[in-house]
Amino acid sequence: MSKTVIPLRELRGSLRIPAANTAQAAGPLADTRARALHDLRISVTDRCNFRCTYCMPRDVFDADYEFLPHAEILTFEEIVRMARIFHGHGTRKIRLTGGEPLLRRNIDRLVAMLREALPGVDLTLTTNGSALKAQAKALRAAGLDRITVSLDSLDETTFRAMNDADFPVARVLEGIDAAADAGLAPIKVNMVVKRGVNDHQVVDMARHFRGSGHIVRYIEFMDVGSTNGWRMDDVIPSAEIVRRIAAQFPLVPADANYPGEVAGRWRYVDGGGEIGVISSVTEAFCSTCTRARLSTDGHLYTCLFAQRGYDLKTMLRSGAGDAAISEAVAGIWQGRGDRYSEIRTAETARSRKVEMSFIGG
Ligand code: SF4
Image (cartoon, rainbow, N blue to C red; front, side, top):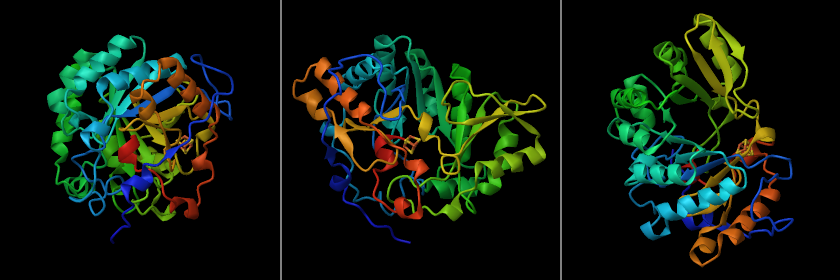
């Protein structure tokens, strides 16, 4: 089925930056639903070597697709400056994403720069694992704390079909091993579950990673972006995932590690470790969502399902001082009321949203 190609410039429009309620150059923030600004996800590239059907379908992200020109992409220095400003507003966790972040040249240098600037921050990265074997050691040495690897299937045919780049499972597994050897633990393995595509792999994934110390996290298939053709029928509810796994390997619920943790935790009764379920569709967690997203070209998005972002790059590059940018961030966050997953319908699922590869998942 061919998909509608939405001109990129339409999805890259900018919202007007609101003024802060009170002049607030630093300090913790709360949005209109009393949510803090705790996490920042930074997309370091809009490119990826995979064409996962739910994220960057090949019929949209083809040879004619207009990726960002180099000059539009935030430099490492600009990223670190933004990270410091967010830290001043209470951000304590930073995740590097993409696209595929390990495709960004010298990404370990960015990790080292962030680590030096913000020694206490929880610094993580989400990758498709394709280049992890080669880079795991350098990332750890640069100061990365942990890593999340996306892996939708252990079945070769299913995985190659889902990544649509003919990429083999074994190379991702080697990357996971290399990350574990480097000390990037605990490793989270994210599996997006789509009915009829890879749901037959739910129990196999649990079986494979039980006892390894790695945590498989099952994610309900979501209507991210405007190109993935989402339907509610494609979603396997987390409750069903837990039932299927527990039928083979008994599970008990575990407490959240911290308030607002996205994944629901379940422990194997026999001590084989734990799994997580991310019920983004069937049990929306917007009320505790403390995540902001900085796109590859320096726009701030306050929801994964946003249609527009706020252009901070223009401020960065037009001589604005940190205090002014910090105030701009405060105004945006204080005005935030996002709760897309609480109000999702078949209608909203068809609406135009920014592509996940542009703002990170
Ligand atoms: S839908 Fe938006 S507000 Fe709700 S949890 Fe997801 S990113 Fe947060």
